[in-house]
Image (tube, rainbow, N blue to C red):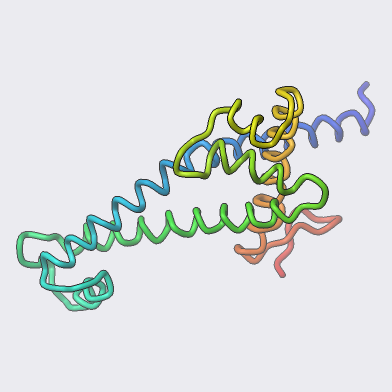
Length: 180
């Protein structure tokens, strides 16, 4: 029979792996999500101008009118859905950015962790592993160890602090979740 501490240890390791992989996935899609959001904003801005407005704000004002379809065949519902999608993408990007700021302020290696993740996933121009290692003057083994640690710590910040804070839930000892 397995000891309770072994079972708890395995469960915690599985949870840690799950957080790590979710965080890695978010980092892998970050650059594309930012690019897509920027492109969508340009398209929405062009739509606003085609409808006679000078900004996205004027487009939002038009959306508040009870019109099923705008001139030039622009569908109000599709436009609302696009604006909602942009807003949701921005929220996700803002959460990741906020977590990265917290990671950067992490004691001891926070700046190095930030530089590694920024170069790999955040900056507009992706840097190679070698470029990042050269900038930070670290060996490949140190680089990959720090990269994993950075992703793990970012995951703890995201899933353990920021997301529960944003949803109004916090983890407390003795219960899985409690409302603040």
